[in-house]
Amino acid sequence: LMKEAGLGIHSSLLVKGRTKGLWSIYNKMKRQDIELDDVHDVIGFRIILEDVASCYQALGVVHANFKPVPGRIKDLIALPKPNGYQSLHTTVIGPRGKRVEIQIRTKEMDEVAESGIAAHWIYKQGGGNSNSNSKDSNQFAWLRQLVDDVVQQSDPKAVLQSVKEDLFAKEVLVFSPTGELYPLARGSSVLDFAYKVHSDLGAHCTGAKVNGRIASIRYLLQNGDVVQVMTSKTQSPKREWLKHVRTSKAKSRIRAWLKRHQKENSAAVGKKQIEEGLNKYSRGDDAGKREYQRKLDHLLTTFKLRDENHLFTALGYGQLSLKNVMTEIFGSAAIATVNNDRPDSSTRNDRDSQVLNKSQSVSSDVPSSNSNGIVVGRERNILLSFCRNCSPLRGDSIKGVVTKGKGIKVHRTGCKYLSESDDTHVVDVSWDKSEKNANLRPVQLQVICSDSPGVLADMSRAITSLGMNIGNVSLKKIKNGRGLARFEVMLGNLEDLNKLIVQLGQEEGVLSVSRR
Image (cartoon, rainbow, N blue to C red; front, side, top):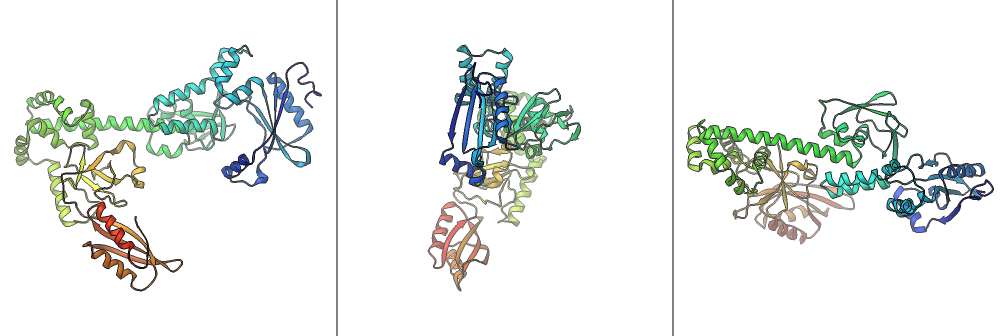
């Protein structure tokens, strides 16, 4: 057909055929959740021609002889993928009603598709078609963007996800008001587009005009949309923006801005605390400021900090207590003398926390200014609370999250609330090895058992036989003649928990025991 149409007579023409392998068919059905009848590229042909004009002419020949399938025609020559891939794709109804996928491209495009963008460069250096430097610039723009992402993103998983989106994600193609084409992952919003164009544009985006109509930053873009971003100098990224972006680039830029802004705010708060502390403990004398400057290197060494700004930031985050910093500067005796005369707010908070702990000895979410067996850096008197959801025990792997009003909240490393927390608020914490007696904490146990008389009583006796107290218990029927029991038990450490699980597992009628 191609030669009858005059294609390939005076130039090169190559037609390749292939059938999709069984494994590839299976993977596509599984990946896209489709039936075998919905796999349309079992049979495929590739037509390779000398130039772009011949490619479009070949597409016309194919459609003149075979009926094209609506919605299955893609012009990736005029609208190439970000990684440089170009081709014409069409699916037609072939002999016996079978669908056949046909790809039409030039030899240069085939080199890129088969061997990557580096092969395209080698092809040109070898004397192939030579276009302007601007075309080269467009071909390698994606590589430059990738390098930029690697430099700016500290998380290698985020970089990998960004590359995956460019290479494999289904795309939506939108235009700027000047006609520039921007491919984005399907499901991208106006905010994604703004960050795609430029990070500063995204950071100040307030919305957009899409096809001449006002749209919010949450608007999901469609193929062919013309997007004009609207900005304001007073606009800045917000945490909720992360819910309205799809692309890794937008997410990483928003997180980076929030982290930088949070550090700046925390440093300002910490600096103010230092100034107030020096004024308080030196009785307003400039000698206090001179003493602080003289002992600054000592402070940085003691608290393992890089510079003064990191000291401010640690105080602002709550990773250090002002009292301990002032003690290192003026000495404990001087601090105690001033506190006896005029107790500061942190001392009052300590007293309030102690009262709360006495009145609510088993409450898992009450802040406490003593260590509760936890060390933050080298600090043991940081305001603390424990996550009720995961209820950490001594021996668990733990992390801390800086919160408002409750100091640092301690989580087990697998806690879902920890994973949802802002990375900039997560701090390293550890169990205090100097404390021998662990505080009792409520732990939730879930037991699947047979739904028969006496099972609950037997499990309760097994718990109390180990000297452990039951705070709460419930039992309900589930399917297949089984019951679900939930116990709240006061435990001191992970070793006690393991003993309890073994003990319960040996009781008759108990099928499984797990920690919630």
